Length: 381
Image 1: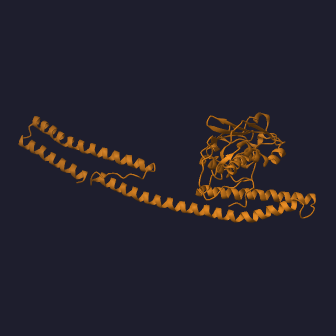
Image 2: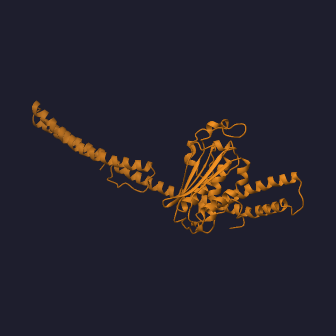
């Protein structure tokens, strides 16, 4: 029976008793007061019980609505009656059921869309590998003088084509790596390896850029025993972080790489005196395709994929990665005409920290290996 009907019946019975008593007592003043008090007690006490019960049920409904607003669709309300509150509970249960069905459908559709995108990127990138490797081979062949002598101008043009092709190779490899990370199909295959030698191999690919920008590279290596590492993946890690440091450190800056054992882990620190990362971008720095605005104005070329790949490699293999960057507001005005940072900005920059367990990287089964970003594995699938 509905709450309003209950209250109406109680009020009617109470009024009938009150007037009956008043008539029976011949409207005696004192007895009328007594009968009125009895009527009020008869009316208010049951109504208090009803309202208290209703308030408790409404509080329970409010709690479930708050959970629903927070995104919880896992629980239904136990219906406590067929009155107005019970109708609200039933309607809310129906809403939760429909929302849960809709969310499940949207999640499935979004997953299908994302998988289709990832599959397309993987396929397109894979198809680009062969022509890019052929272009690279022919350019190497011509620059090496195997097709005849070149004029200085021809050599300069070919070098521009060569470096443009290298950037395409890097982009294709990054896209393939991202697709394999997103699909969860990349493998980690550790073997005993020298971590310091891997770091040096990545540095060797950047020596020309380091020399051109007159950057001072400081190596602080401590003895580290051979541990189980996926050499290719660690090359990717070192190359991505070091290439960013070189790219975003102004002329005459410094880069320091430190590798040392700390308790049961190996600690890698790569620091630079570059432009730094504004504080508001810190939570996004490992996100896919993200590039900070202060960097876009200085260096337009970049995919925003490198650190996303690095984080996936380190965390999937059982390590940790984080960074510190005290720079908050470095602008183009802080750079002199010679391309160097002004003296007051020498302490700016970024430091990346990586820890790897002494036990080595965790092995991970997968269909594919990630690619080296240094153009060394274009023909690997």
